[in-house]
Image (cartoon, rainbow, N blue to C red; front, side, top):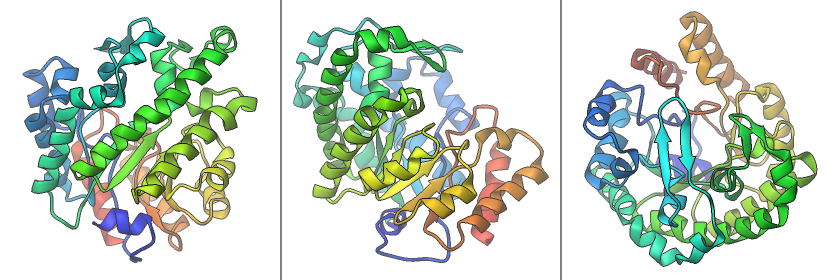
Length: 334
């Protein structure tokens, strides 16, 4: 499994591995055909056969080094009893959060999520043994943002609510850490050989609380994964140059950088870990010549480091599949 060995420095290679966040999904015509017949996104994620098929679509098309299971970070609050709906052009909508919704035990949550683990197992059985299968979780803070409705609008924290409910937030994040242990272990047992943790809203945390609400929960999850020998990729999106402090404190096997972080700065300052990603997904929608130059730029910058080619966020729906194919070719030929 190329990716897991590469991340943990068990196997060095001059070839940089490549995969894409959100590679299985909305930009692929073969996915859209399935989606037309399956309007309920939650049910689709819980359909093991279809989730497997969708997970494998980009592997069949591009021969990437890793598959990432088709699911969603919000399957966890769904399985904990909170109603989650996905509204077109508005994103996920969650019902009012009550502490009592945590009354479901991790075992009960995992029973509800059994189709996800079945999809991982089915995918692993159909995936070439050299290719990695990535399972994933939302970081406690990011799950908390959705579950407790902590945003004022799409990209702004509701500061009044944050400070009013800070103790409530701390309490729930601590519980989420333990709940996520079970979800990680189930994915690993089913056949995922790498876990990626998405902290998509880490950049919203007020500066003096970043260590408490981002670094500390991440370290607990990292320590759990280390105990279980599960390679972990962390993605604390939006924290800027605090990426350096994050790596020193959490010590992840690999860190995904976002598109706002200068890759030269990252190369010079993020040491002793594998680096992944960075390219702005919007670049895939623009001038092709500039895009391909930018791809080579990332490869040049990280040529002497363990680096996995990926993006600084997920592939956008407007992306042309042919564009992804050209990026893959450049990385393969580098």
